[in-house]
Image: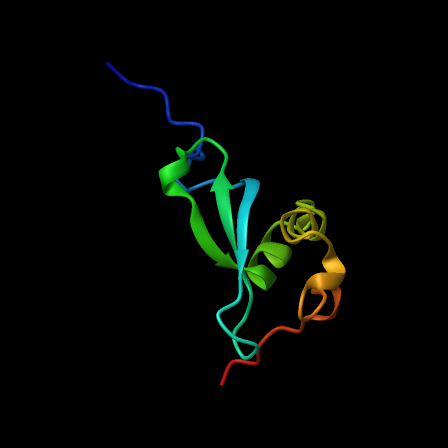
Length: 92
């Protein structure tokens, strides 16, 4: 018997990842890109993953990341570099 596809799979079997919530924020050092711990819609909490902030901003522009990170850190002004001013790393 054919089973329906899980919510996170598109008909072409591509993963439809969509962030649900930011669980945490980290930056190992001033030289490293900041990361957010993302809880994904349709997946259990143990599947949460650390993702670069710029990747999340680019791939999910409607996900208001700045609001979520500022809430976690007590204010966007407390970040070493405000998210609005972060630039993508140039690939070499």
